[in-house]
Amino acid sequence: MKITPVGAALEVTGSSFLLETESERFLVDCGLFQGGPDAEERNREFPFKPKEISAVFLTHAHLDHCGRLPLLQKQGFSGSIYTTAPTRDVAQFILLDAAKLQEEDAERESRKKLRAGETPVLPLYTEQDVVYTLSQFRPVIYEQAFSPAEDLQVTFRQSGHILGSAFLEFRQGDKTVVFSGDLGSPRRNVVPDPALPSTCDLVFCESTYGDRMHKSR
Ligand SMILES: [Zn+2]
Image (cartoon, rainbow, N blue to C red; front, side):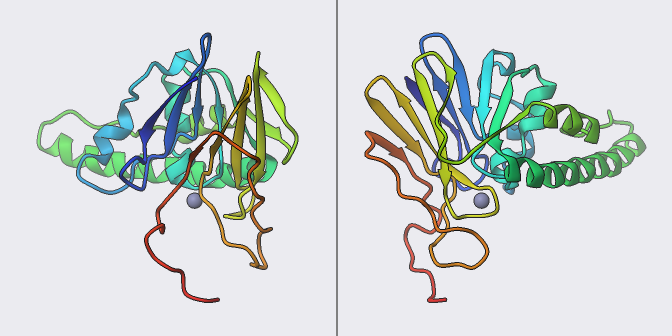
């Protein structure tokens, strides 16, 4: 399996990994780039062909992990989006809200452009694109391995970050790769404690707060 980070490497937003097996291509997350002068431009282009992606595995519903799914769909992705049922439910609100904001921003920007005799701008995606995308979601159950492709097993495990969040274990042959998504801390009242990963060969771990200590709760 070949794994390429296509976002959130040496930065915080736009989380996404491209996974390539001999016959198929998958994504882990498809997040929105947020902030910075080039975020708008980076959000519009994928460094791969969306229609060649067989499936997406979504760790959780924050915008920097799911925010470009409607654009992926709009640009030709027609596969399944595997995630937990609560993540699907939360993502529905997050994505519809994001589409509404993008439509409003584009409308405001277009008015300015038209006054200056320039071409109007299109929103990244619309609420209708989100509706299509939501129909691609396939709920999975924590701790139940499933096989989205031959010789590939995927397990969603509790990451304790937000409602529905998971870290992912991919097993191919005798190798196991873990994608942490975002991790929460234990002993909070609102989400379960994170599970511990199995023995694995490779870990892709978020490190947003990796260089500081959290305050005691
Ligand atoms: Zn998050």
